[in-house]
Length: 125
Image (cartoon, rainbow, N blue to C red; front, side, top):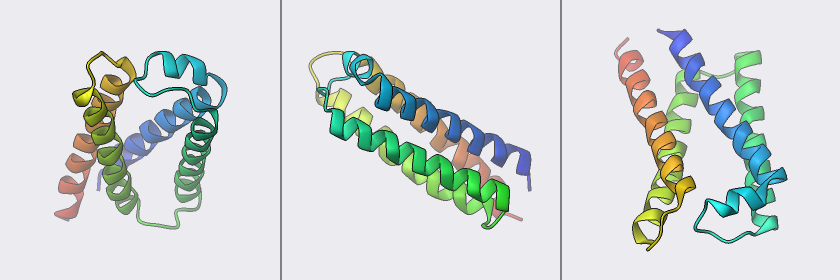
């Protein structure tokens, strides 16, 4: 198993989730400037805490090696797909450009592709 690639995948997920946590908790006005969604401090705070919780789960798994890392890749790939689809649908039905939705689609679908690669590479063994 190419565990270093799985750890890179998990590291990228942690970095993305921490970035989202910081932006949604402290810089929600900036996030909303590039989004097609309006500012909602309560919802953005909830998104921030959801991201922090995800980071804590990933870190727990990595530190204590309590679960199969490939299963984490499967779950996070599915989560990335849902998040990417949400951003893509938002952008497709909008009549204006939402830079954060384009970026969210690209980054999340990129993680889906990376995750599928890891799953296919490691499930054969």
